[in-house]
Image 1 (cartoon, rainbow, N blue to C red):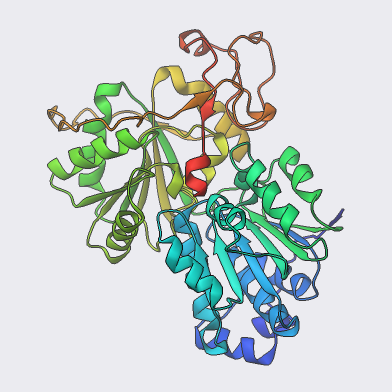
Image 2 (cartoon, rainbow, N blue to C red):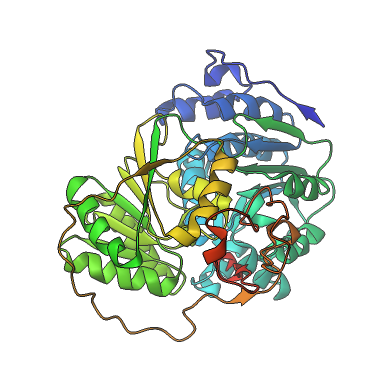
Length: 450
């Protein structure tokens, strides 16, 4: 496995082996200086080599594979590019980037995601797209119904690859890989890449070049993190104070769909414009929520982790982890929605005393100690929560062994057992005694892939 060393050269896009036509398009789109991941990945990818790119969120990974894919598809006439991503929102954003760059090249795309009309997607496929972007579940739907053939795929991209190869998506990804030609170029990109997942993923690649701009778990330099140790009844009051103190756009993450729905209603009762995005919302509702947040029509967006890797909104002032994520890596993706592209950002997490073991695992992943702030004494008065009817089946489904063995959350292990390198394994310490017993497992993720 060959690895590159990061060298901060003052290169331009003209130095990356990009064709004159694509270079003109990039300049017209006002992309001026390539990011580090673009500088390192594009020259290798335009040569047709397999690439594993690891870089922080907000560093331009989509353009790092879009440019070489488009350039190579021009040369590889009659073939197509296939991009597989974990969420509908991310799929839409990737397609949008391709359309920006490829519009003047008469690029045709097909977006295959759950919640959208199968008939319209079949129509897009029949029109002969050059690039297909989709989620694993919907791509497999089309493959099984024989409305899609991937026999002429020459370039395969797995975006947010670590997420794609977890236990929720691995069977679907394997099904797709079986159908695409063995002779192809494969590119994997993500902000986090645990070694176990990297080893598994590269079994499907040919001598891939690993381009690691920042070690997995690296946080943007200008992103300020802090946490508050709170009781459950302090959460809403502290959130209300934060929404008063910060005047810009705020992205809030909850653990469950019902929690997001209820919190969104309570934020509206506080007098703030808010929308929600989670897997119980229709595709149209999710698009409307995201567009309202992007445009500023809604200042607050409440989301579950389906949005952690699918929101590209510039200038988010504050990210709030109202609930800590189920997996430590998801913390990196959540807070990476702010402090993007060199801008400053702020991330605040609410932690109950019995969750402090999770903080320690996150800190080990990001190699940074998160600053603990004292809960302000001047919190707003208690506000009676807005009643929101629960939806049937809204609580996350759980299964005993977690996403894979590396994410095992078996509470029956010895207290002295080592913590896992990622996810939340068992830990010892003063906070462990108050943790719930039993095999809690992790949330099943398959619904996001459709």
